[in-house]
Image (cartoon, rainbow, N blue to C red; front, side, top):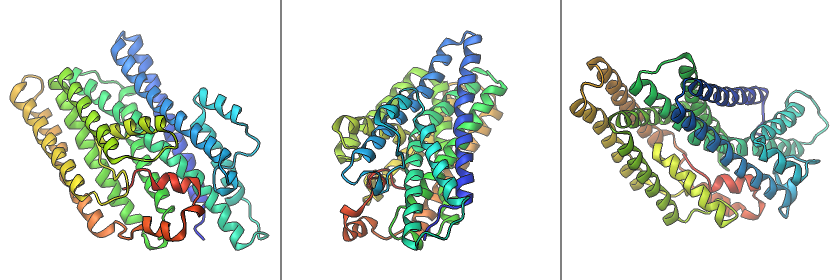
Length: 383
């Protein structure tokens, strides 16, 4: 039996703390900018916070509603929300409490299981209970991943641009960037571990080393990419914003070409594709669980070109903006992060990535026996 442990329960509290700290630091930073009459920075900081909150509330509510109204009901492994009406859930999500509602349900149900010992349940009953807890955790991890790339990643880019391009440094800015960075790291690790427990061949997948290599690969490539975008913003804010918009549009169009089928409605699918376009602006994910070797090679060739061009252009076109020490430091971080990230990428996919075709396994086992959470994660982003 794959068990939801006390350690996992305590780590859920840690994830909640990071989420709250990241959001509160960003709101506090927006208030600071407002007091200093930096209204554009205030607006952008709040826009990223609201974007992450709004999108996660929409998906969270729709998933709750699907789990409650499905043909198999909440007994099929969906969230345990007995006693909570659809109207009450709508009100909670309207006021931005969807993530907190999911944390509450997960911590409440997890507490009953991991901190209360009982020997009355059969092995099958215990398996179902722990499976349901991982369904709750998996839905939450998917929402946290979306929130990280809609709020934490753009927020980190914005604050780095303000600090590096305008020499505006304060404790609140550093707190915002630190919490954003750790929230990104937590979202990546938590999602991978929840995904790992959702695969049929879970027992064949080692956890610690692959997770560490995967985290290094993602953090190094994302951070170096953000630093490159920051240098381009310093060089020309408007041109860089136009270029980033074009990259987002191309990524979103690619989602339409791939015909993703994550959502139950066509309108929500359009929102999902737009959100994935944002994610692909910063890092690569396998969107449909297919062989994407060629797409990944093309993506990271583009990534390397951007990471070479950004510091080179700043040094050539506007050397008066910063000192040589600044360029060497940031350029070194971009180069080192790129190399380490790509090395970890190769190590992960050559030696540590699961090679089993788990989609075929799902088809053999029968899709009619899947939970809705399993269906969602099958059609979500894959490492």
